[in-house]
Image (tube, rainbow, N blue to C red):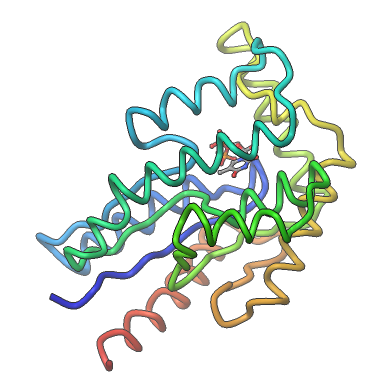
Length: 223
Ligand code: TYD
């Protein structure tokens, strides 16, 4: 059985990543009937991961030190690789993961100022350096990203009467560092990362996603 394909989606909060991830999953499912892709997300997706996610995203929790936050992200990821991603790849499946180690490099490495080196070293150590075959990085302009994140956070507060996501409360300066780190990753690894930039419509972004995924699938089938 040939190994499957590992595709990750990345971007700032409010980049429309989760919507696109679901859309891509149905596109793949219709292209490969009976062989649905495995859709997961980080943090979360496993029993341990969902508990870690609740800890990490609940703004009522007391502040988590940046190193502890990074360690929890990697604990979640190591479990997700062992329980979901690696078994599915071995079975020849396509795995779609909403966020992966680029998020840790961008948010903890860039946003929290830990730097890339330690994140990449932990990835080698704890995740066997597992690399996506393709990363779709959605990066609208910084201004648009900030605006969307704020609006989404506001809606969550109104609907639930609570602030669900402590990350979304971070300052604009934090998001600017995250955004810049993402651009740095894309420039460093252009073969892996498809950078989808600009303030495009949902349909226009999806077209670009399909283009990048189709190229990957064609190359995979040709091998
Ligand atoms: P989530 O609600 O999944 O946001 P989104 O829908 O935008 O993906 O929350 C995930 C949050 O966790 C998001 O703000 C990014 C953050 N995060 C990190 O800081 N480091 C990580 O390694 C990961 C995976 C996520």
